[in-house]
Image (cartoon, rainbow, N blue to C red; front, side, top):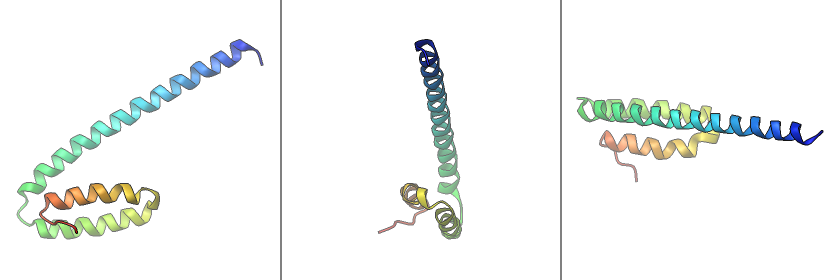
Length: 89
């Protein structure tokens, strides 16, 4: 393998990494917008305790389905539950 091939591979890898970064930033932005929309709805919902109970059930399923993400989900879950008036100890 000569130097131009290695340089080309490095350029391609750099492009792939940049594309992944762009995708990650796009996903983060999307999540932030969805969280703001959800918070707006939850803060005005008339039956927040019922919504909180349903949310907890769905989160249990989600964490069981993706155990490697469960720890990250727990922090976000606590924030949403807090918005619904349910504070975790």
